[in-house]
Length: 258
Image (cartoon, rainbow, N blue to C red; front, side):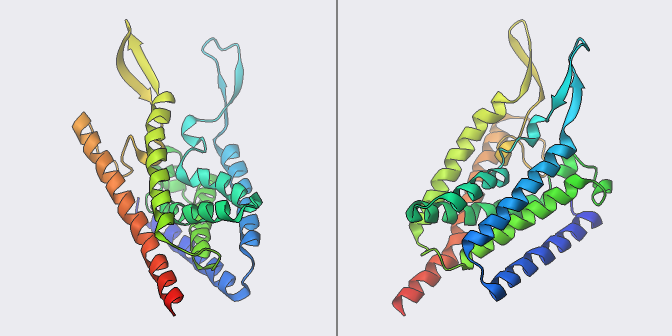
């Protein structure tokens, strides 16, 4: 993290986001057309990801061999869930529900993708940093998350949403809900080892929503350390979400008065 390769990727991503937003401001396509483009990028991204991580794995007996996608690559992170939301936002004809979904996507796609770009998990789980410009998975990761950052900004400046604090409240409630559910999902997908009915180790576990392990490599060994980390994570997410809506809500109020 923050090696010269990572920093170079961040510079490339900043350039892609800047160019995309500038093109939107210049040409002003409809948000529906932007969502269509985002859908295409998302599908291509998943195809590249699956093609990069799927592998043929034999059974313990060696008799059967079949394809397998590692569980940490399941589309259960916030950024991956945005793919489903993009499809729903594109096809939903109910303007009220669409606005609520787009307002949720704005904050979570923008903040989640920025966090992912700053702390790329692929460099610790899938791709050695030395292969940052060789592996197709690196291109998939950085291009996809750059698209989400640009999409979040475009939603904010599209003028299709009348921003108010109810959008922020709904987003916070959903984030808390997803965070709570992730605790169950991460435990469900873990690979525990039992001896005589007693849990002695966990040999593999996912970390969706980063609710089990921090993304910067702290060694949490005590339950109270994890509990403190979890509280800090929730508090930080709440603060950032509030700050992301603040300028939009204030601008909408000023425009209403004028």
